[in-house]
Length: 386
Image (cartoon, rainbow, N blue to C red):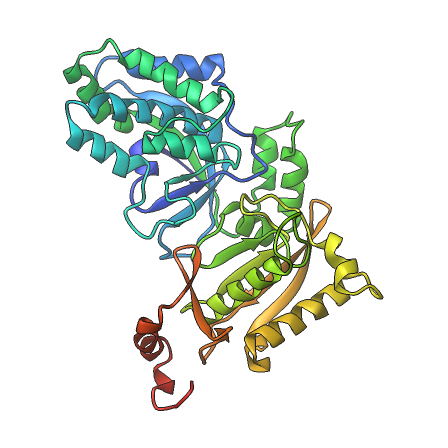
C-alpha cells in the first residue's frame, strides 16, 4: 500500500471512474467536521492548502483500460462532499464564464474517453445516490421525492457562492481543485482491502455495510464485478426464469440469450452475472430452481436448463464451448457467473446479430453486418453463410 497526498485535480485527472461499492453507506449529511473544512476551503486566502482527509482506493480495471476504474474502499462521503462544492462552483461561474464551467465539468465529472453508457460520469456513486448525483451533474431537477443529502449539500454550497462576485468565484474555481487535497492510500490490485476497511471503520454497524463487505472479502472477484457496475465487458440480469406480473413470459430468458450472443460476437467477450439487478443489488437465482427442474430444484437443474436454453436459442453447441458457467454464493444468494470468450464465428439469435457496445446490447443493422463481419471475423471472409 502506498500513501500519497494528492489534490482533487490529480485524483480525478484523465479517464478515471471512482466506484463506490455497495458495502459503503449512501451519502449522508456532511458531519460538522467535514462542513467546517468545506467552508474553510471557500474562505481561506488564495493558495492556502485545505486538507480534506483520507481516501483508500484499489484498482478495479486492468492496466490500460479506459476508463480506469478505482474502487473507493473508504472516503466516499468526503469525496462526494467536495464534489458538491465543485458542482456548485461550476453552476455559479457558468453564467459569466461558460468556458471555465465546461473545464470544471470535464475535469471532475465526465471521462473524456470511453465512459460507460450506463452511468457516464467519473463517479459511480452508491446506487441510492446515483439518480440524484446524475441529475445534479446534468443540471436537472432532483428526481428524489424527499430531500436528499447530496441535494442538500449542493444547495448549501450554492448558498455560500450566491453573494460572491464573478471574479472571486472564477479565482476559487481555478485554485480549489489544486489546493484541496486528500491522502490517498492506494492498494495494489491483489491486496485484500478488508483489513484496511476495518481499520478505518472500527465501529461500522447498521445497514448492509459489514455484511456486504464480509462477502466482498470472501469473493473479491464477484464483488469487484458488481461494484464496478455494467460496462462494455460486464452485464447484469436479475432473473433468467421468474417473470414479474404482467410481463411477457420468457422475457428474461430472451434477455440472457441476447446478452450471451452479444458477448460472443464482441471483440473481448465479457461476463454476465445472473441474479444481480441493474443497480448492483444481489437478488439471487435460487428462487428459480424449482421452475427450472421440479425434480432437482437445485443449481445443477438450473444450470442444465440454462445451457439447454442457450444451445437451442443460439442454434449452436459450438457457441457453448466459449462459455463458462459458474455458481457463486454471496449475501445468502446464489449468483450465476457466465464467462464468455469471443467466438471465432458469428453467433445469431433469431437471425439477428447482436454485439456489446458501450454497456448496451445492440443489434448490428443489416446494412452494416457485412462490414462488421469482415472486421470481426476476417478469417471467414471467404465462407458462405458464416
